[in-house]
Image (cartoon, rainbow, N blue to C red; front, side, top):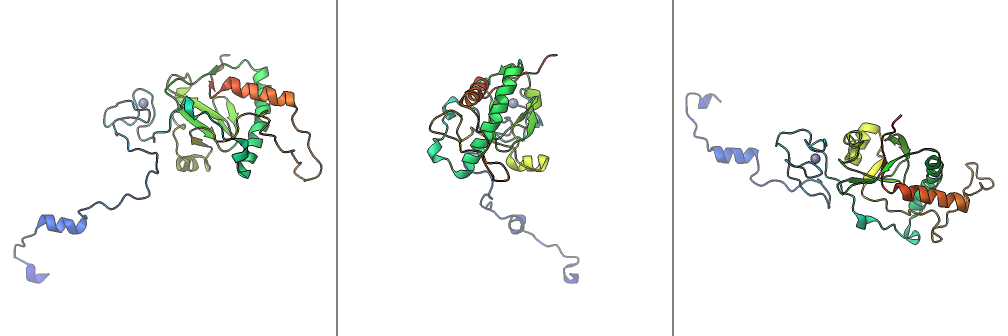
Length: 234
Ligand SMILES: [Zn+2]
């Protein structure tokens, strides 16, 4: 560039910067899907107002970058009719029902206090078995709703708003999704007969749960609702 030495070059800053940064923003990348609204950055996922540079909500403790999950709403309480379930959903329902039997037994032997969700709560349903939280193991098909009023909210804030991708990053798989469980929620509904369980080897049949066991399982989960157990005081 020897020819330019010693000379002033008049540069049109605006034009030059146009070459670096297009004047129009590119179309939004695959970003948030439908149903995700862009949130005011000074509000947490539960809409509490905070200082603009806050990292955690001063009201509920959620990380300020947590995505807003759908909140628990009573009108989301309609399970899909059994006839509309896919094969996968039927399999999920079967697992959930086996688990509920265990829940029923647990429910009968432990004086567990369930705290029902308050109006402000994050609703989620498990899509995989085995996440341990709030002193119990959660299974596919179960729902819970928990909000800042719950005595165990401090345990919840670090994970209940994680997206599927964030769950993969933390646990190697996604255990839950937000919103209500789309499948069957009753184990004794005559419209939702469970198939006979076959042993792993494929020979013979396992005895299915009795009607009475199913009723107890239903009662246990109905009693819990979407509630989360209170801390056990010993
Ligand atoms: Zn908050």
